[in-house]
Length: 541
Image (tube, rainbow, N blue to C red):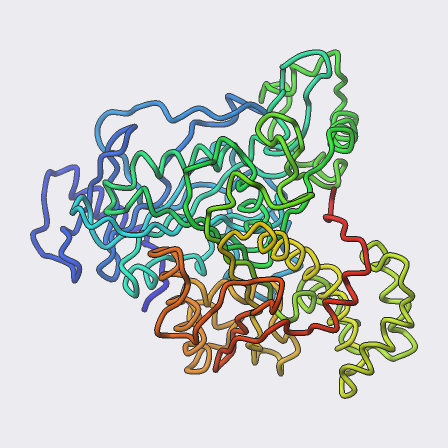
């Protein structure tokens, strides 16, 4: 398939045809007219057809957030006529090079991104419009922690999922970093009371839009699956504990993204105070921060580093409890959930910005592990290395470094979430993505972000990550079919994979994605037992 975006010439042609009142009678492969128009709750939008799929990009699901900084967003004002939905909307305000450390895997990012506070837009791919088919809806929430990136990258294109499984695919952008998660609430009032979670409330607003509009796009509002990778998975986990999101989604899949605890109000306030100091504001003139004329967007972006980390806040309002502490949230206990990680998370998360880590010596290894002391607890680095050398005698020092940091930093939270779901007896399935990329001689293994193009069936678009080819496609066939079936039924079992039992505490059955996928009971069990002795600290909280 082609992963190209609509060209400027094509956009002008479509607009010109619509203006002249001309209707093309030629039908695409899925039976739709060449210029699809849909009526949303705010007004009509005009999309286009690509490879036989109806595509709508940049549909507003919320108003310009410059008008409601640090406040919950409003629904878009209704419009008359027909709006073009032909190109992605802008990404949330952020440093343009926020994800430069991951540039080796370019398909995740948009070329020449545009920042804007008017960022509440979504995109829809569908085979049919208003045809009563009630297709499953797959809503993807992008990663980049809570601070960066967008859904505008080519790897998130929904065409192949639509053609493979006749689903409706939705992606979107929302407020991030300090614009979405800076806690400015005053102890003595309700002003800015929701500021620490407006990025999450944007996602609730988006899901309300899906509920109210997706039938027009041939989707079933009672079968909505949310899924996300890294920060996107963490956002999904957080939504599972938000009362406002209850009933807006019916299945969840988190990919390398966990959120056990939210930020405390005290910790979040410290970050906000640091930002206010950086831009020269105090609590006495805090209202100025809402005015883009007094505090331009660019000034806030430049001050972002002062706050260091932004994420959901345990505010007692939008988020009344920690997402997965001390247990799994009761309000989503009945929602089927898939959780997973990649086998070699930190080869990209850490190794992507430090090439020296791929050539460590045994003498250097303990010192390098000490940089991640917060995840190791009181365990001695030398003792951990000795265990790993016993379990994996052919591993190199660098292999051990990435295995240890993956287990303690990235995998630990997923194990805890899985165990807490199992204790709750919620329908849960666990996976480990183990297929290794051949890129750069295989140095990356199965790193962070690797499962995204397989879930979207876009391994050729993401050939710089996957290498493309028949082997990658064979894995993508299994993963994408499974995600589609999960969206359709709430159960991942399908003909493309072995029988996948629910996760439980007795056997811990886990799907291992590979060229020939398999279910293993308690894979890497010795590592799991070891990390259980270390306290898990949610990064940033």
